[in-house]
Length: 107
Image 1 (spheres, rainbow, N blue to C red):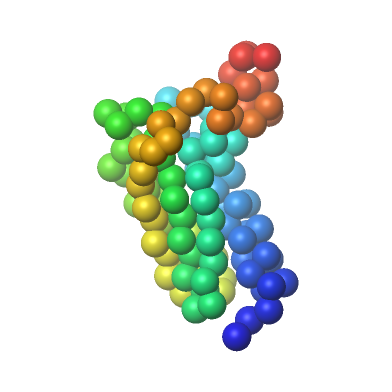
Image 2 (tube, rainbow, N blue to C red; image 1 turned 180 degrees about the vertical axis):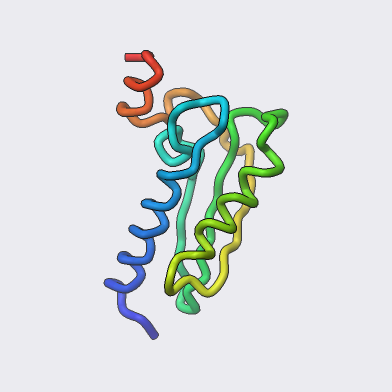
């Protein structure tokens, strides 16, 4: 079984990749937008990501999870990716990082 350091390093790489994925309508990464609710790496190096979109009828609600899956799966050491879409709790602009709010002129 891997040690915690390996899991933390892999989780950090996942976050780095998520910061490169953008909603095409918003110039901020999905990570900074607060669309990623949870990242877990299990002992088989499967990455479990719980995420949402800004609204259930968002135009990328079908494609964004696929992009997340495919890009995270490319990370060395990741055996598989499980992306779970949720709308609970509903996304709210308060979930954005300060950097995202600044980029969007909300601060």
